[in-house]
Length: 326
Image (cartoon, rainbow, N blue to C red):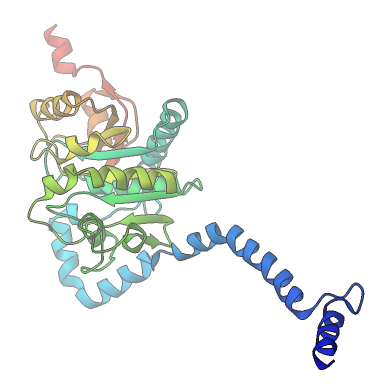
């Protein structure tokens, strides 16, 4: 009799009160929706984990100048290549700013018609201000609300981290390629100028081999999925072949040409090296273009420039002396 009573009590606990399920059923019903919601929200959690390290260019620059003082300013005056001139700066000349707006307009047009999202910036020779062009192109595109990342692929003489005061021992591209960290851990966000940066990282003994591996192509493809534009700063193509290797992974190339510096032969060699591996040349940026002197000499050109400015587009016309000879 005692056993039958226990059975009947257990039945009452399950079915005794209509419309009120047992505690066990309640817990099961509560856990089901929570598991489903966790499964649905999993992509959002992944994006939260991909929070990039924050940097502030203006604050870091002020701290650096306070420590280094006047001595570094004197060195920078002797070597203008070490100075970053942001086109978004308040003290920049009108022609300098307009030059990058013109470049941005042309890149946006090419992007909309030919689906260009990744661009490698290179030069024929060293000291042609290609890194200045890379940074300013990225910043100029970001001012329109685009999500832009700048990748430093100059693994021999990296400069992007120095220009933006990101520090010396930051993780970067070489750490990703060597498997020391994942891609998101190496990307930094420069909050006040609105761009993302993948620094070069530690200088490797075999830069060309690292850039030529399949993993590098996957890095570019991954970045193209995450960002609207990927700007790649590459070494001078006439010196090493890295830019030509990177050109295979991107949608096009922009050639930085310093005014009255590289010879026509050097520029043609750079163009040929890109064309030989089927890299699409989107255009050229003439750096440190002296617009005032050019106007006096009788040249006619399309674009903007300044004493240390930039010009985008194509020059045409002949000097007055040549016209007189004809």
